[in-house]
Figure 1 (spheres, rainbow, N blue to C red):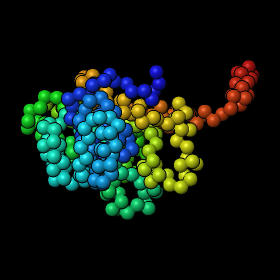
Figure 2 (figure 1 turned 90 degrees about the vertical axis):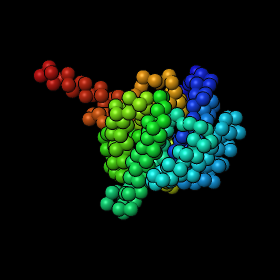
Figure 3 (figure 1 turned 30 degrees about the vertical axis):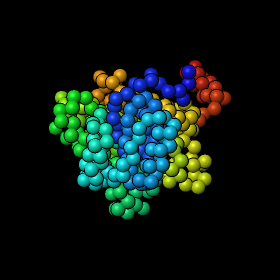
Figure 4 (figure 1 turned 180 degrees about the vertical axis):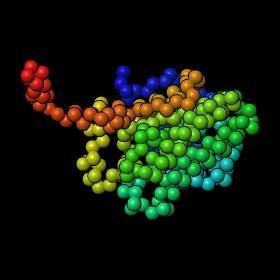
Length: 293
């Protein structure tokens, strides 16, 4: 058994209809593939319809499942409503919303234009709000008894982080929304949870964030106590569990999956990891000598 193995039993998501925003590539695609393998019907959305169509065809061929590509800019509420109606027309219902669509810039904040800042806020926070509100209203109005919202956040949603301030700001809002609605909407049978992933490299996102040879110089694995980055199947396993009926008592939770990265960054003395063994020996001798004096 390996962490790259699939976790849930066959047909664990059979009968469920899942919508994955930003599902055409990267982590959204990886999670969608596993949902399909577990028997779910999945609609994937983004602004790039051609990429969605290509991804849907590829995943259907690989899994034998049903994947519906739907163009939708989550920044616009009317497009989200149209997307929801298209899902209902195709599948008759929807059980799960996975808010995965995101945008980010790595930049000193003073170098960002107001428009660049707004772009990230609009996709991450406003887009998540638009989808959550549209789907939530539908579930409440139709008295659907069991529904799930799963949001993708990040550990710097609660710590903050320099150089990704728009993303940190937006993700913090999504985190607050997750916990707030978990309480408010539980009476309608709606569970709301989130995942905070650490480094899970994807070709497109990491090329944009760390262009050229910057990715090689900025080795994310060195920041992780487990000394590796995440495998996409690990995230897909966690997401599948949280949208499945196996997690029916999990509500308002934010699950960190980062190999201990954020804890290492938070600890005041964690940098002492860089001290070699022989220097620790010297320090211990010095401390003992001082005690004897």
